Length: 221
Length: 205
Image (cartoon, rainbow over all chains, first blue to last red; front, side, top):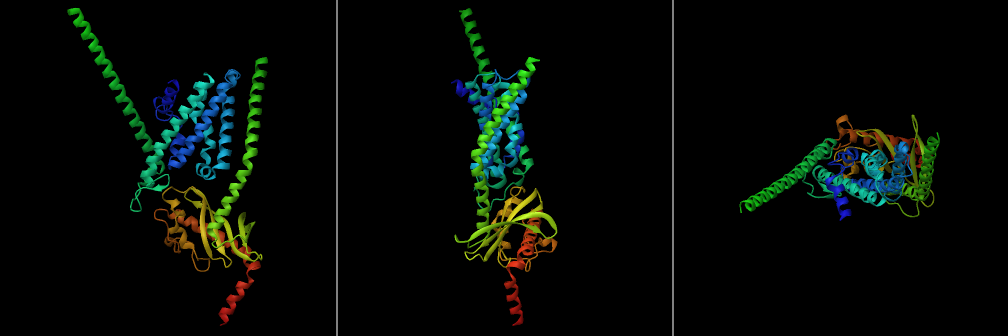
């Protein structure tokens, strides 16, 4: 239950991109194709898990004044490991992600979780926080990339969807398309959350009224 | 004071451990990385040079450009009796829409193009990246510096440019010209005096 709640927290309630509004740089830049987006998402997931675990394990060892340099070193180490592993075993992916792998170092999501969560919480919680946030990031960037790839290139995972006759909406795959799509996603997310909130409030109100009526009828009776 | 020293010492320990882990990862990824780099080049050569067989060997050499100090990687594909079967060169241009473009060209021993394959580029997806499509690449097959003007039609050349990506097409032309010139400049005389001779015989007829 607790774990599921943590995962849901990362993917939806506190989605690092759509709610906390962190990590826009890779989200906008590496979402031209779903394949790259998934690669990017899982690389960030790996770094998040690794850095969250190590930073949580070191939270008593780390001097308070020295915490930022320690975080940076830990995160940079994991990013370099991902970089080397991708280069060695997923050469094509490494090539298409290019400079955005090293740039995970400055991905605010990783740093944000280190500072806000991992440095204050136990190992087990930090692990699931990392997984949840990483999946949230992967989920968001994958949805964005799917929309852009389908509209802008007529393909998904490189497989043609509409055949030769489809003339792609090129703007979707160009940088402005990333901003437009992400903006619409942010709006959609807010809309959904607002309607959920409204329903919850309406329900609460109805229950209160019911209770009042009940009280009144009891008093009258 | 003691606190300060302690802090520095702790940071130092974190650094040392990080460095050790990285050294370990670097150690076991080094081999596969070299391997994939090599096989990428090899795959590209196989795409651009048709009809390669297992007996052939590939020699790589850095060659100079005629009026440039930078060197380009080129590959000689040799028959079993070490005569030249084909050449291949990893040429480049800096005129791409997104900067540098690396292209592998394969030519037969008379410097006629047998294939081109863009390797690294950052062109606009959906526009400039169409240069990897066969419709664009195949127009260069069978062309050489002698029978083809490597400029887009808009500039008075022969390249049928990609729609809405003239800059990329122009850049490809630049890269091909550079590569072909480098190959001809470096290999023509030593390897193909025979080719020149046959030309003369034909003229005499």
